[in-house]
Length: 62
Image 1 (cartoon, one colour):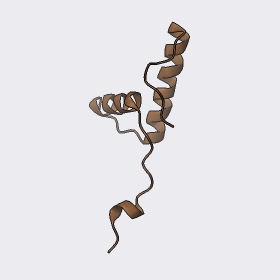
Image 2: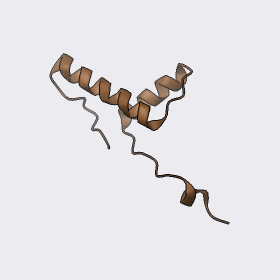
Image 3: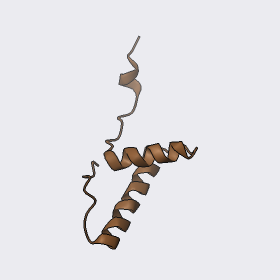
């Protein structure tokens, strides 16, 4: 019998912004995979930088 952790793919690293996006999409009734969540959070980072000229204070873990 093998442990489930051995067969599961490596979980992507999520920062606070990724977790917030994932929580928000689940709260809205939409399930997103990690790739889509990362794309959404990257878009938020880009928009924030264009709007304020500063980086989001949460570091991105990729």
